[in-house]
Length: 114
Length: 115
Image (cartoon, helix red, strand yellow):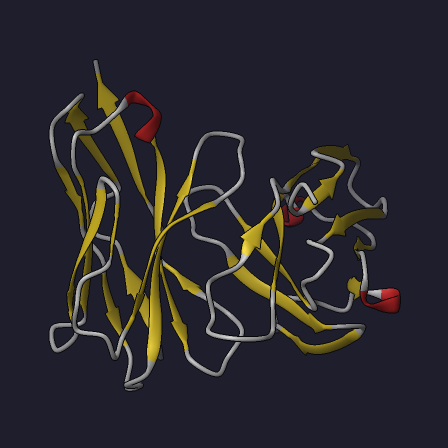
């Protein structure tokens, strides 16, 4: 079965510092997408970053970057220069190419300390 | 277009009552999805529409649940004879069916509380 594991239920980071959120997944597929979504309290899920499995280059979006290790099935999210607005639940999601549904992890709650 | 809209944002209902939620996707998106998110968990897939056709229903969607997407535009999710275990956030999302998959756009969800 395809699964996504986020082993850190909660993380804290000081404002302006860097934090890394972990995600591992299990699949026998070779072609898929990986995503990180941010869900602020009582607000909609927002796409943070997207990675295509056949691309070796790690995706980056401004202060957000990933460390994608395909062989290890690991997909961590690094947030640099953390801001108070980064506080949210972060979900890692796996999406096999050619399908239409995500498999989400259980999420990591990120607290940003002023 | 202001994104994916869901109505209502919150619904409190008594056990045994029926409830209906509405989702308005991004107008040019032909794919629409419903997910359920319980406290402390990630969203779980419920059902998927391509245009007006419902192409898959999760086994999480019992016979008390029904979803429709008439004319391939908005969608409704109805829960009949609600149970306390139905309390959750119900998320709707949409996506384009063309080009490389860029991810869903989610709505803000409908939080259901069954008392």
